[in-house]
Image 1: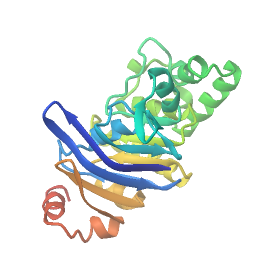
Image 2: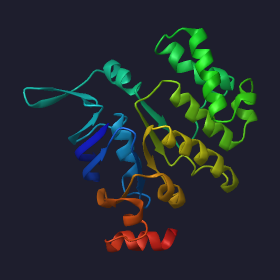
Image 3: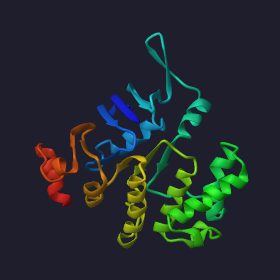
Length: 250
């Protein structure tokens, strides 16, 4: 479902990604661990072309993201075509980015009805079902400011799912939450994994990665240091850098 090949990304003279490779099969869950500044979030933003690549390529469901290939060269797509591609790539950020002046239900309905121009009645039914799925059916008439951080993040997940994405990207979705609210968001994500959603999760939640991930990827310094099953990487890492990181967070 997602294939990244030799992905490079620089900001000026700062090389943030130095040839990242990653493959996630349909229905697979990949958890990306690593210290701050290792390139994890930048890599995630490259997958839906929020950041442009300097080299390499990323494919989602077999299609190049952000570029078309002509004559052996990559040519960047128009912003309009990129926006259309992004519709199938859901993303949940650290901050919830909900529209404060809209109700919870309207937040979830906004993109499918405005961007995809889907039938409003059908979108409303889907939004209600998604809010029920994330445990917030009774909050759909509330405004974001009336919700806890954990509830707002669950609305953000429902909003991303409303576009019926092929893959969900999570960029440290619990890092801005109070510790007692983390569990409710992780439970929703575990449910998505059980339902077969393809997910790439940048996280510091080692327990979640151990329980849910098919593959754990450890990044540092803009490269993948090692990757493998949770039992291989978390319980028995081979690289000294991975061992040093896990010794501090476990």
